[in-house]
Length: 377
Ligand SMILES: [Ca+2]
Ligand SMILES: [Ca+2]
Ligand SMILES: [Zn+2]
Image 1 (cartoon, rainbow, N blue to C red):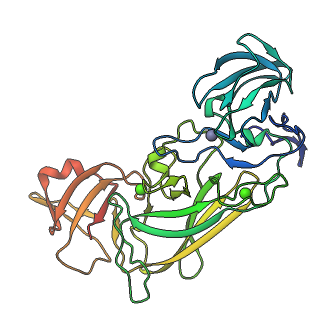
Image 2 (cartoon, helix red, strand yellow):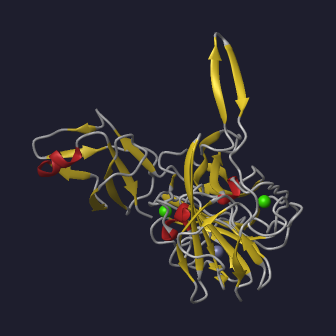
């Protein structure tokens, strides 16, 4: 994120930080110098897509004004998603930025008009909010709208773990703790409170800005720390289906995040090779001003469930190669074998094996180290 940032100059051994004010712009409804109720934000699920702007809760008929000067480049005065699109270009510093003011009826401007900051564009229609979008969802206006204060921190209502891929729950132990193995997905039902005009919590709820997690072992050592799996400076490159569980809804707000997935691809917490024991999975959510919510659950790794095979672990032979492993004391299980560059990230599935601990030499070329064994459960 380039805005609300700092320039760093190295002067000998002296590190100097020069805060540079964000470009910033005023609010698009009166009063311009006061923040307004935020009822939606960038990155929320809209089931088949992600919400690309900020929703400003104002009544039908409220006038909407340009936040910055520019040219009206597009306009649609029909339907509930009627909008006015304004392009601002400035040269020192060079900046061009598009703003869509959506749910505007009776626009009072026309394509080609120049508007100054504060010029009226039209009125909010029966959707009773202004959808305000910057650069078609490639930017988050909450970084620019000035002033903006957000005092309510994200609320994580529920954390759960499921099997990566199938989404099935794990069995639990006598204390109700999930007994995890293999690839684990962490899910969290969470929201950030709506933001009132004075920054206070305006009730339930809007999307969070940043999603991540941390895994600690029973001694408190962090075994995996990913506090920023994804965040919403933009929705570009973000996929609703990798971020949100399909049970999510936005009316009413019920956002269930796949915490272990990536913004645009699958992901999971790997328990392979972890010593058996009790672990805590902590979900971390942040809002755009750094307000932070956390919630953790205990899970149990009942047995060491995988082993990384590297050089020397495969005994070559004329007829077959024997894969050795440790930590697997049951019989009657099978494996999936994955190629892995680092023995941690899952690569290509090479083969599924049932019950055997041997591989025939004709498969040898497929099993060059490093490789990864996955036990099926
Ligand atoms: Ca907040
Ligand atoms: Ca996953
Ligand atoms: Zn919206």
